[in-house]
Length: 287
Image: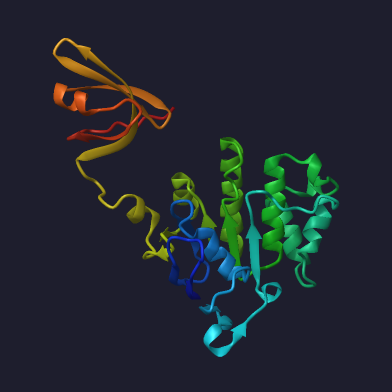
């Protein structure tokens, strides 16, 4: 169990941070919210990179921070594995040397196991500049896991990768979590990624956490309803006899719908709109 209670005030921010979070051991939590909401700051508080005058952090049976009782475990003694978007590998070391840097005296088996899962053994003698983006991130994830951390923090680790590589690394992360049951917090703006990997979602809004929820409940609060709602951008508005045809961009698809004169004349090119469809019977087809 992880318990985090922290308040932090920024001189330049338009809001103050206030977290009160409890996370079960072994959970995989997606940290979700707008840019600037405080997600990375939460990670920095956990790692000790940001100090607050009002913080309590307990991880399993160990108190990491208790400002009231003057307890503050230094960052290097907190068992945290961290993976960033930009890999953060040592450029002058081979893949194997990067992995061994994170290895403790009793984690030699873990290094071999993780290398096997992440398919890294054939890359042991390579240097970071010789690797693709996906290979670098596999090394970064493996290095964090080899530390045998009590908490694994993933700060948008896959966002810079192409779709195919991203899906492959999601499979690796899922396998790593199944095997080692590391308590994992992952910042992501990718809803399918959170659905695939996480058992809980931690929403962060303007520096405050909301209640932990399952991905299904959080992203779909009104399941099995007769309405379908999408968001899109107005590309064009054309009159055709007595009706108007509105061309919309929804995600990466362009669609056309009909509407009446009143609605058509209220729309502005380029603006974002919501589209609701009632009483529909969806048909799902594989591409």
